[in-house]
Image (tube, rainbow, N blue to C red):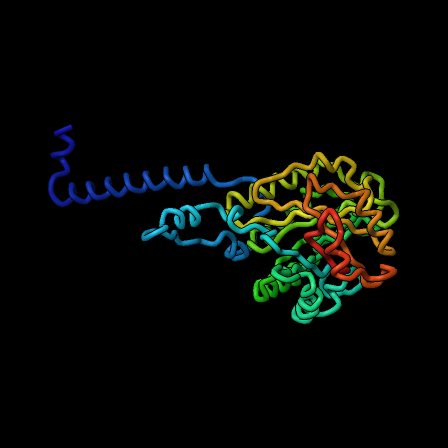
Length: 338
């Protein structure tokens, strides 16, 4: 080795030495980046976000430590957000307006712009707070709508405009509300449709709702038959969403399943609990208060889910009062208005 080294003595040798050091540093950096890419999450990157849309994903939190009680505070600071920021904090009831953007045909949420809808929602939610309780506003926004025709993709659904979704996401952040993206998949799979909204679900205040009424089997057309889903499909969605929450260190997310007949989710007891998710079975039947309660008692699976209940401004024969909903057992933790 001595002869080649001597051949590059002087200025040339110094330059080559620096280049060799730089090459080693670049090689080390490349190995580190490759390792980081190998460890990157896969489940929540099947649909990539548009530029800048993932910027408000997992928030970076500074550690708390030192001083008296520092160990406990440090432990709390390093605990995953899905443990320390639950959806259903003690005394909290979620109250939602349901609908889609720009139209009142599918629910009250779209009858007005987001700011006006929020003011109306706050008034509706206030009685559910109770004495020492809290009423958390929620925008349940239908983002994938089932269609009576196959459409370009042949899946009998279409997505609303992303710009409209962003308006509701931004309004919710300003107002301290949660957003629930409701999907009606037509003949598509719930998991397939949910992934199209991964860019929004990465945001800390956004959850997901599945509506089996609009989940069609082959040959079925939305609006002509009542759809259904099996627990295995719900579990695929929940596994994907749970992985997103855990890997991105997000607060606990809502995963809601709508139901008003047992046939819509016939094996509901097989739906699995997941880390980072608050599972809700939302009972949607309309009619008289007695009819609604009869439906609730038949459908409710409180051993598997927290319970939800829907109130219809137009279809219900008499709109139940908040105190009547609060008296329902099993207890209702999520109320929505349509």
